[in-house]
Length: 285
Image (cartoon, rainbow, N blue to C red; front, side, top):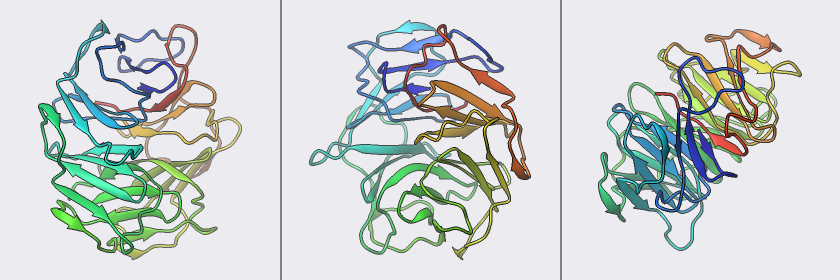
């Protein structure tokens, strides 16, 4: 979990619940962390953290409290841009989102990296306020956007691209999207997004503009969702995890929801032992 307030990354064991102390904490002056806003892991478990201006990378399976330098630093701060979100695809390429743009960096970085291999930007892209990025099994790129909803782009971009998305789920009363933030896809390709105290689920493989009601909605006073601009992730069996920045919790919900659900989370991680104070995003390895 990336925690912006404490400027730290904390790790919890599978099955954690309640007032669980982290089994790993990455924090300190050597780490390069700077108000982290997003986090992801690659297939090997390497940890990627998007800070306000950089992406820092750490080895897998940390234990204890670590104040060590990252194995790689990606300098995204071109002209003072602020990073909004990030995702790592199945091949390990790193996608970083900032205002109106997604930049892509080569897989498995080492040392200091300054140059992207691809940039998606321009008036045709439907990118305005991009916040989170995820991928389907075919490598298509899914981006939440607080202006346009959810945009989907073709896989494996190269060079500078000003192309329209291949699919869009718009912000409107039918879809329910208002300010989509976190995003994740399950093994079947269904699309999950966390949007102002709602988790919405949409059908897999959208093409064109798809203005349809979600397959499932998790919302209501029992859910523990706090309505903030928060991140989410899916576990290996489809369990849905959300961070709730305003109330400093991680909550989890059963896989494959259907209909509208106002249910108590199956997991809530919170309390003085957790180290959670301002969570912004989380990833599950």
